[in-house]
Image 1 (cartoon, rainbow, N blue to C red):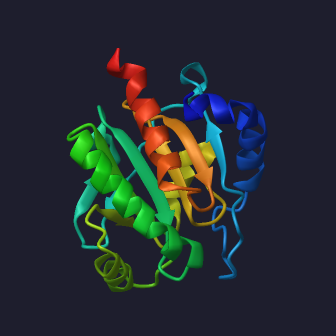
Image 2 (cartoon, rainbow, N blue to C red; image 1 turned 45 degrees about the vertical axis):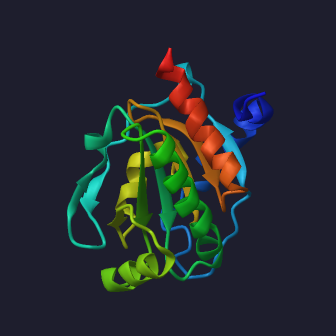
Length: 195
């Protein structure tokens, strides 16, 4: 049974939670961490909003436009280096990216979005220390979250899975429950267009 069926019953509650929780885009503006609920929110193909149009500069100072990744399933992970749950889940993200890149080259891309570090050097040091080799946008003002509409996370960490068209197919608000949860979401989203 696919993960999509297991969590389908939580879709409506998760969308309501996401929509009401994103009213304060800064999320943890007082620097206190607000724990996410780890609920997996699935968005059926016919219910998905417009594709996300997210771009900016990476923590390494390079331009990155997520629209250039159309045709791939994209995992967007919102994080910052001072977030305990972000630190804890990063090994799972790195392992998932390694596994999916090996099994599905050129079909999956991972992109981080750092929304809190005061200097890109801090974010880059965090990535180096944890073996992160995929790019992260540096967005200390959380402006990229505005593009996410009803799926804008209210606090890091949060992970969105975008379909090949760039639309939100799934959201995990809070730490990823497991690597298998994430890889299953990506595989299910890939399968939508594998025909």
